[in-house]
Image (cartoon, rainbow, N blue to C red; front, side):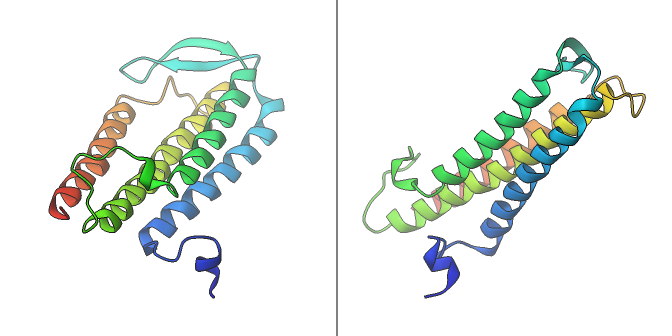
Length: 168
């Protein structure tokens, strides 16, 4: 029995394994970054950005730890959830003939979404840290970030829906 079978990932694609690895590494990075950066933060840090990506609200630097905890809990939660595709809702009826393929597609979508969201949230954590430590003269995350975030989500979910319909 190989390692992937032992940890319940025997039928996981290479892309899914890469997504899981990215998620885990970014969670570890976010925790280390938060621990190292926390003492260097000013007492108030950016906690909200408007639609143009500009800071529109500041809060206590403890919010930095909260964001790090959200990144970790969300990442671990979605990694765990991806192992239970039988509990998901599906856009097509699940039958004996399509169950295995639909479960694999849905679990893969969760892993891809998890990696993408973790990348985005870790980017925001670093950006907030850099603004709060005045490491660069940025006024926010930029107008492009919310757009790219939405486009990324739409592409991942849209691709899954198309693949799911093909695999009826």
